Length: 210
Ligand SMILES: [Zn+2]
Image (cartoon, rainbow, N blue to C red; front, side):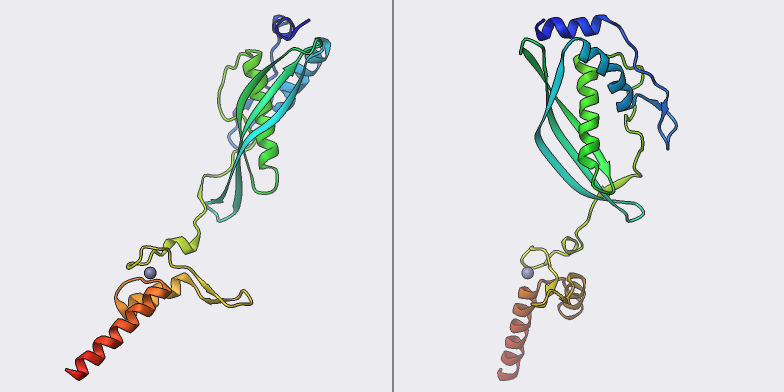
């Protein structure tokens, strides 16, 4: 059988992925990856079809929960190629998204991607299209780099923390910003603060001379 015959044969068998798993936080029912695998494994094996995943693109983002915890957000563009016994194949490109506070964001993204590749290639009817994950992370926003909160009023560049050669902080961006605001009336980076100091010194000399 070629891949077209194999896939249509699997579809023709008719099946329903069980929906007895519950989302832990929100309580809605979902079709877990295990449900999908348990249903598909015998059908795929019987029809001698297997899928090979490839990660085409990856985007990762560090996020912060409202409680300050870290979250890794991983978005994968995945290609699943389904091969039949005769070597013929079809591919499906899907997006998988996963969030995790540890090292499982990409694993989750791959699991979700596989599930949706199977859903879509085999046209599995889905009665509910809610979040497919077993857990729903608390709302989050992109992580703020504290250094990016201060922009120099003169040159427009971010005011950055100054560190000693041994890596310890000499002056934080916040300290530089508040000090320059106090002395010069605007938030300035280190270089522009020096320039402002020179200009002021020159002005004072001119005042004295004239
Ligand atoms: Zn500046």
